[in-house]
Image 1 (cartoon, helix red, strand yellow):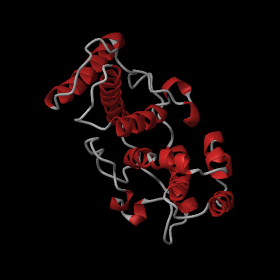
Image 2 (tube, helix red, strand yellow):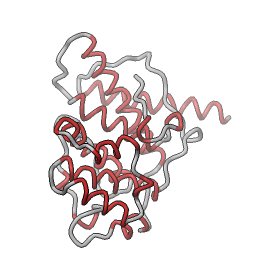
Image 3 (cartoon, rainbow, N blue to C red):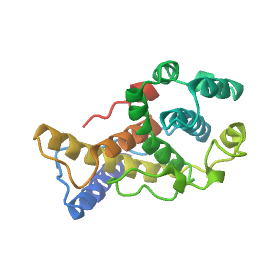
Length: 222
C-alpha cells in the first residue's frame, strides 16, 4: 500500500506543477523525473532556517552597501553566528568586490523563500521580478531596527508543511529546467526570470536537504 500511495503522491505533485506551467505557457519536459516524497524528505529545522536566513540578511546588507564588512563580521560574532557563516560567505566578507556584491544581491530571493518557509511572508510571487525585502514587516525580519537576531532565531517559528514545501520545490525544479533549456536553445526566456528561478530552486533544495548538501554545495539539477 505504501508503494502505491508513494507513486500517487509523486504523480499528483508532478501533474499539479505541469498544470501550472501549462497555464503560464512555459515549456514542459514530461520526462523530468519525480522529486522526493514526503516520506523520503527531511526538512531543515525552524532554527536551522532562522540561522541561515539571519546570516543571509546580514551579508545582504553589505551587498547593498548598508553596512561595512567589518561591522557585519563583528555583528555575526557578537550574535554567535560566525560558525553559521559558510566558506563562500566568509570569502565575500573578506573581499566584497562590486562583482561579488552584485551576485550576493540575488540572495534576496533566498531570504524570501526561507522566510516563506517560516510563514513570515505569505506567498512566493510569480518569478518575473525581484522580490522587495522592504515589503516584509520589520517584526518578521531577522535584523534591523530593534530586532535582536538571537530572539528571532529562538522564537517558536511555525514551519510550512512538508507537502507545501515539496510542491514549491517540484514547481521550481520544472521552472529551472525550462530556463536551462531556453539558454541551451539560445532563446530568451521572457515569461520568468532565470536568475530568480535559480535562487528559489537553490533555497528550496536546501530546505528539503536535497542530496544532504550544505548551503555552499547545493546543486540545482535539471
